[in-house]
Structures are given as structure tokens and as C-alpha cells.
Length: 262
Image 1 (cartoon, rainbow, N blue to C red):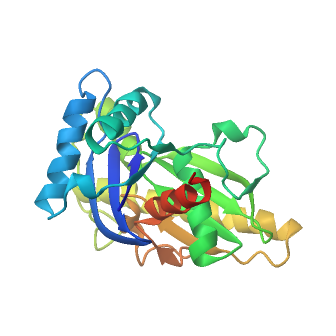
Image 2 (image 1 turned 180 degrees about the vertical axis):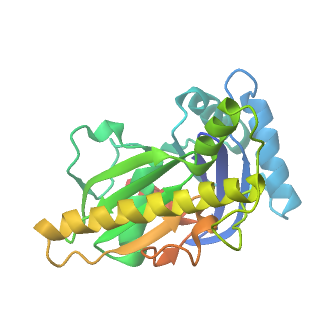
């Protein structure tokens, strides 16, 4: 079986594949280099597997996508020590199958590469991937299947945390949609402002991306895919997102591994 590990700034997602099918997945807080060792990370993963009825000896292949360089060595070491597997590290230097029209391809996050590859493979082209995590990222695939660039914005959680940390009289609120946008109290008003402001940002960015691309590609009618841990907030809310796929990054890691398997 194959293990895909996607290390994000806040959360790490692990997907277990049998063939090309995801048969289990888990989410954990991203390890911090100063605190978690390869032994601790290995123990957590083995517990995930065993608690779900799997044996770590069944893992024969592994690939890692990471936007947190400081934990990469520990996770790679864990792979070799506990699974006896040399992992594939996802980055811009491997065979992605993408034609990248980006000024500095090495700056593209590994998760964004995986998302773009999976978007083309599962949903076709052109496409836009909106990934809602610590940051909100948008990646654009042309009609010809080229990676042409993207947009990076603060995520909803870090934006709201900044507000709460500076405004002394405002307390944290849960991210549940209010029934109306006009708040009758501070708690309601905060939720409305945070969530509707987030939705407005997302839809305006998508609108401008599509408008700009149509100026050079008249047939640019993209499938817009939402993914990432916070994408659930926008289900049935966005005017532009057609598909929600929580496993998109893991699927992309699997595709990239197959393209680069020795």
C-alpha cells in the first residue's frame, strides 16, 4: 500500500491508498521541529494505522508534500526508520507533467503542484483550484493544461485571529454561518463579518481571475475546485466553486509518485 503525507502549516493530512483508491485518511497537527522527533511522528502514524486495522508493514511506498521545511528531515527519517521506505519528496524539480509558466517555479508550494496535477487528471482543463488552509490559495490551469500562476491570500482563521489579538473588547467566535448578515449583537456581527467577508473575498478573486483569463483565452470556462480543511465553510455558498474535493492534494501526491516511481 501507499502512504501520502501532506504537511501544511497548521495540519498534516495522511492518506492511505490501496492501488489508486484512498481507503483511509487521518489529520493531525503539524509537528514542530523543536518538539517532535521522528520517533514521536512514527508512533503517531503507526497508531493511526493500527487503530484503523492496518499494519505499518503493509506500507511499501510513500511520498511527502511539505510547505514546512523544518519538519521534512524528521518525517523523512521516520519513513526510513519505521516503514523501511525511501519517500519521494514532492517539489518543482520532479517530473510533474505540468508546463509551468511561473517566474520562479521553485517557489510553488508542493501542495499547489499536487493540487494542479490532480485537478487536470480528475476534472479536466481549464481549472482553478481554491485551497482553504492557513492561507487561501488559487491556482490556475489554462485550456492547454499549463500552470499559469495563482493568488495567495490570508486564510479565514489567521485573519480573524489577527482581529481578536488586537481588538481588546472582541472575543473569539465560532465559524458557523449566521442566519442573517445583519447582526443584532456583537457575537452575531463578528460571525457575519468574518464569514461573509471571506465569501466575498473568494468570489471576487475568482470573478477577476476568470475575467482576466477570458481576455486572452475566450474558451476559458474552468471547473473550480474547492479543497483544504476550511473548504467546508463554502459548500453551497460560493457562486463559482463547482466541486469540493477534500482529498485533492492526496490524490495529486499519488499521481506524482506514479510519474516518478523508479
